[in-house]
Image (cartoon, rainbow, N blue to C red; front, side, top):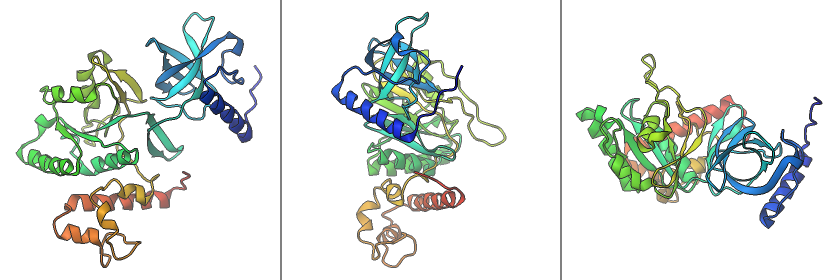
Length: 349
């Protein structure tokens, strides 16, 4: 078989512009070659929802709730779980197959940096973000802050879930309660849960109705166990905590969309050891520290680093007990990690 000629940037741009015009008009379009199914074997365009993405294929849910494995056109440069798409079904096939033709505009997307691919989109069209942490691996308010920054950058107020609460001793429980009380004061809903003891599950279920939600968090915090509690038919593999590192083991390898029995959708995203933010600007980082924002304009210098700078209003609020030490420290640790990553890598936004 002859090797297909690679499209130039100009060709891709013109194809995408044509697609966008036809998306706006809502009319059927005749696509260029690029998928493994011939055009004359494809039916009319229809709307669909991306349930999961696997390399050059995607599982698309049609308007009747059926899932079809589809090829992806070469001009579709980005396709992730949660995308709304136009696709065409193969007329003659032993199994239902199709081709994704175009992606519709996203109203939100969660991103993270990738050393090889630049900015990697994890999922799109999300309504709610649930940040899942746990007692084991160790409860980390810095990881929570990282996900809060990502959610705030999407314009979404996240809900904070602490799982495996039954494992907390009295001192750990006091520490967690103090942290959650402060996050609640900032306006972030919080909930402590235990899949093992069925604690907090009934309070969580109503929050998930009629929304597209995403569970994010470190590997090993119990996202898979939680999903199996909420969606018994999901049958998701549950990983163990490594005895050597004390860190969670990855069980979800690709984002996929699930449906709740009572309505609503959930995107199960792969867990990560550390959620990087070095693709964001310093302004985007500080927007995740909402208690800092009213103070920044009061700093003496516009380029204030909010450390030992003269006339720093953020530092003054810390000294006055208006901002807790852990939030101040987390902010500077995250800013430092961004500088270190940028100095070690050539990163293109």
